[in-house]
Image (cartoon, rainbow, N blue to C red; front, side, top):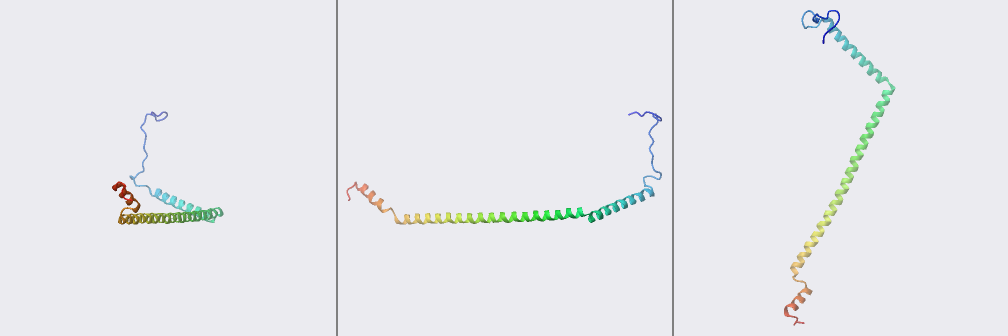
Length: 135
């Protein structure tokens, strides 16, 4: 983009500090002063905040809220554990009943296998085999 006005045709001039890239001693002192000033301002703000009634009220409300949330979390974990424990107890009882029923079924099957054919069925099947001659 072309410049207009006084000195428009001349190249731009860059200003540099003499002595190379090393900053002047005055600039370093100003940097320390700026940091010191910022530190003092921050310290003053902290002091003001600590003396403020509004700050103390906010901190108190925050502490109470955090304590309440902690209590809610503990209650939630306790009720979850109670529900899990109750479910586990019911599940164990259900499995024990199922095992007892299976044991009873196996015991009944063994008895039937040892006893042979049922008596009522044995007489009926013998009669059919003889052609109904035995009475």
